[in-house]
Amino acid sequence: MSKKKKQTMEEKMNTLRAGVLGSNDGILTVVGVLFSVGAATSSRFTILLAGLADLVACALSMSAGEYASVSVQRDTEKSAVEEVKEDLKNDFEGQLQQVKEYYENKGVSKTTANAIANNLLNGPNAISTMVNVRHGFDVDQYLSPWMAAFSSLFSAALGGLFPLLAMTYAPRTIEWQATILAVIISVGLTGFISAKIGKSDPKVAMIRNIIIGIITMAIHYYIGQLM
Image (cartoon, rainbow, N blue to C red; front, side, top):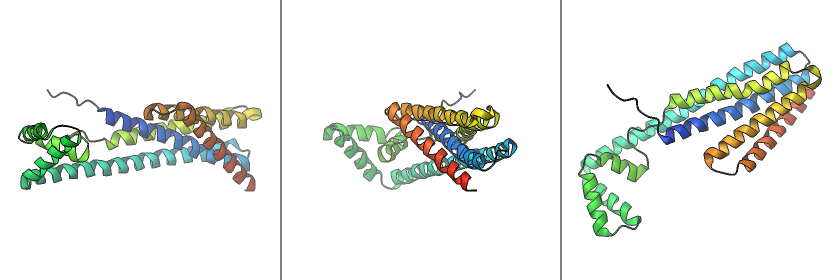
């Protein structure tokens, strides 16, 4: 019985990245529609209908975009592997020289680099070695377009749901304040998560996302006022 293949760190990071981007886009896209429509009409049914339509469209669009993007990357990586196979078959000495130079550039002596290159390229992992040296990824550890697509679909829908619920179910007297608060909390959270993934300053990412969220709300609100 074959073991289930474990998700690599790169795959996990890509899934998280797709999720964070999907969530952020879901929040800002939906709140843009909510503020535009909400400023033009007081009908909660109209606002809810417009928000739901945009939520579904945004989630599907983000999902399709992630699937296409990661699929292209996956196909490119597979093509690179095939190219390496051909080069090993038709120009073994040239590939051997590349591996030697690779290790020499890392500070290994010429003698040691020559020994390492011969050992690796004459062993069972020659293809993996060349792919890693030339392209920097591991053979048979391609990113999953489906994982990225589902992550983006779910997170975009979930992200857009918070402002939608706030706008349509909060008491009339505080519906705008509740929506603004929901957006600020949501985009602040996605900024925090993205910063943790990218190992950057969470405070800067959160402030940046919140400012973008506020500007988005303001622009769409005043567009709605013109309708």
